[in-house]
Image 1 (cartoon, rainbow, N blue to C red):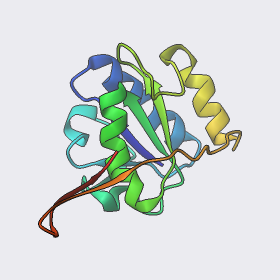
Image 2: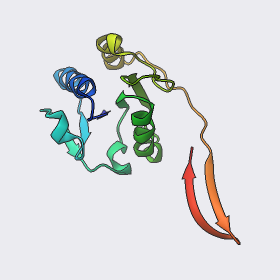
Image 3: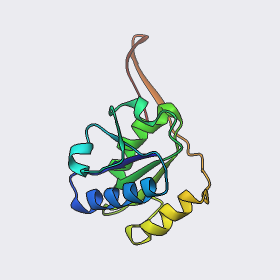
Image 4: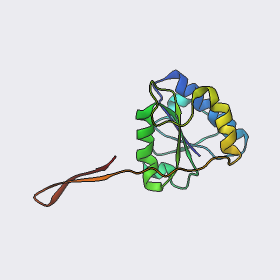
Length: 139
């Protein structure tokens, strides 16, 4: 599993450490990105480069933060087709599925395989100038 967090928030760092400890104690291989590992100060996780390959082969990405963190995680997970579960530690949390007070139960459900993946639609966007591609993204 890939664990990503909003490292600028102490609550996200604390929650990420809790998730990593619980997963590794259950024998699950956990990855964190090289950009986040200094702030997370976690033991037992494999450090991977922060890029699309970070999610390659991961069963799931657990994202702790707000909608911005979830969107950043989607940039990493989308090329690999890795599902995301967001834990809302932000203000609004439109995109998150779980709340911090249910974090332990959410991890227990994940460990038991008690979850389902919902496909979400995105748009591929290409900007062209006189037929020449000048930008490409997705939303």
